[in-house]
Image (cartoon, rainbow, N blue to C red; front, side):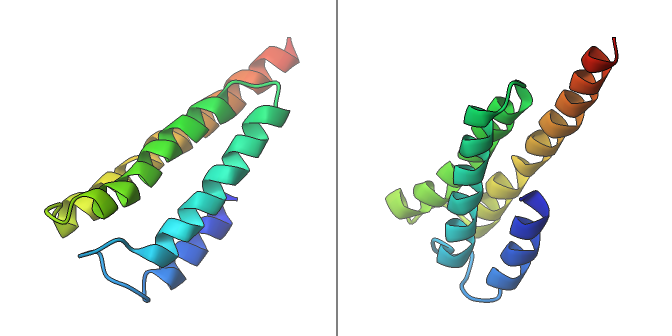
Amino acid sequence: MIMTASVASAAGARFGTWGETHLPVMAIDLILLAGFYWLALKSDSYWPIWATGFHLLSVISHLAMFISDSVRQILYFSFGAFWSLPVLLAMVIGIARDRRIMAH
């Protein structure tokens, strides 16, 4: 899901501007959020819950642009991009812990 969303976001970033709500990237992020949410509901692990929460914060950056026009482009882009790192960390750490627990 993350790889597909990354490729789709790179393609979608060409259509729109970071000076206003970037609708193509927002749509991709909402679809990814739904995927994370579905995974969190179906999984026995905790990392999908954390990944969903971190990605929700990224989606909120899109909503901030709807609410306030005074949000600067760099803040909008940075806030959305920043929360991608904790999503990946939650996934890597969570999967490693799950594998270690299952091995014992």
